[in-house]
Length: 355
Ligand SMILES: C[S@@+](CC[C@H](N)C(=O)[O-])C[C@H]1O[C@@H](n2cnc3c(N)ncnc32)[C@H](O)[C@@H]1O
Image (cartoon, rainbow, N blue to C red; front, side, top):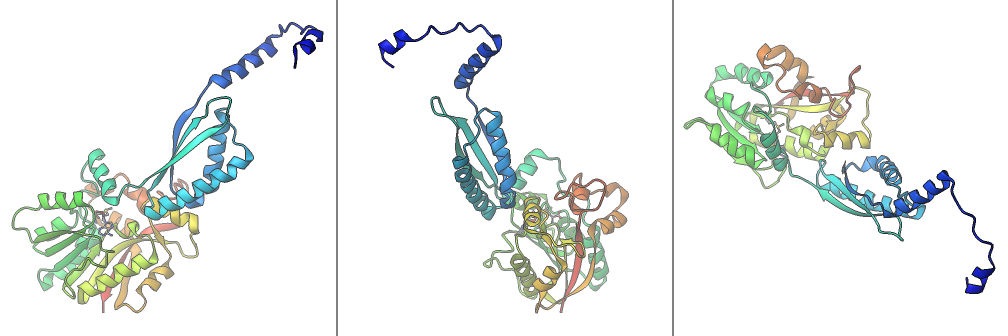
C-alpha cells in the first residue's frame, strides 16, 4: 500500500465495542504467552493412539493446536521412542519436553528423552522410600511348608533365585539348610550379606539367572525356589531358559517352587495387556505357554494353586497381608484395577519335580 492509497481511504471507524476490543487484546496477549513443560508417560507401545490424543489435547489447551502435517511427524517420533524405551525395559518412561516457539512462529517445539532405570535402581529407590520389610515380615508359607515336608530327610541344599532381602533365605538358613542365593540387585546382595549372622549356612551371589554365563552347581540342589521373580521376565523364551537352568541345577527328584502370573482359563491376553502387565511387574503367561516352556524338560508339575489363597490360609494372621501391595498385585489388580470383579489373571504357586 502506498501513501496515495492511504490518503484516499475512508477514515477508519472508531472501535469502542468492549467485545471486539477484548478479542483484540486477547490476540495480543496470546502472542506474548508461552508454555513449557514435561509430559511423562510409560513406554508402552500399545498406548500410542492414547498418548497422541493426550499430546494433541494438551497442546490445543495451551493455545498451540498441532497442524495436521505435524501430527503424523510427531506420531512417528513418539512411536519409535516408545518402542525403543520398552525394548530396554518395561518400566522405561518417555519424557516429552515441550515449549511454545516464539512469535511470529507458532506451535510447540518438542524434545524426547527416555529414562530406563534398571531393576537394581528401582529396588534401590524402594529401599530409599519404603518401610522395611519390603516383601513381608514372614517367609512364604508355601516355601516353609515344602522345606518342612522334606526336612526329616536331613538338611537341604536350597537355591533361592532372586532372594531379595532374604525373606525366605534367612529363615531357611537359620533352620540349618544350606542356602545359596542368586540375586540381581546389588543393593539386596549387600543387604542380605549384612543381615546374615556369622556362620549361617548362606551364600549370596550377585547375578542374573537369565544370563547364560551365570552358572550354579549342576545337579546339586534338592530344592530351588523363585518367589515373585518370574513377574520380571519378558517372554516365554526367558521362562524356558529359567526352567532349563533349574533342571541343570536340581538333583534328580529335587523340587522347584516358583510363582507366576497365569491368565484365567479361556482368557487370551493381547499385546497391550502383556505390555501393561510387564510394566506393572506382573508379566502374564497363559497356561499353555507355561506348558510349552517346559516341553521336553525333565520337569513334572506336582501342583498349581492360587498363591494368594494359599498364603492367606497358611500365614499366621499377624503376617497377613505380607505387604500393603501384595493383595492388589497377586490378584492382577496392578494391571486391571477392578474393584467389583476379578481380573482375568492371578499369581499361582507352581511346584515341580525334577525327574
Ligand atoms: C519382588 S522381589 C522378591 C524377593 C524375594 N524372592 C521375596 O519373595 O521376598 C523380586 C526379586 O527378584 C530379583 N530378580 C528379578 N529378576 C532376576 C533375575 N533375572 N535374576 C536374579 N534375580 C532377579 C529382584 O532383584 C528382586 O530381588
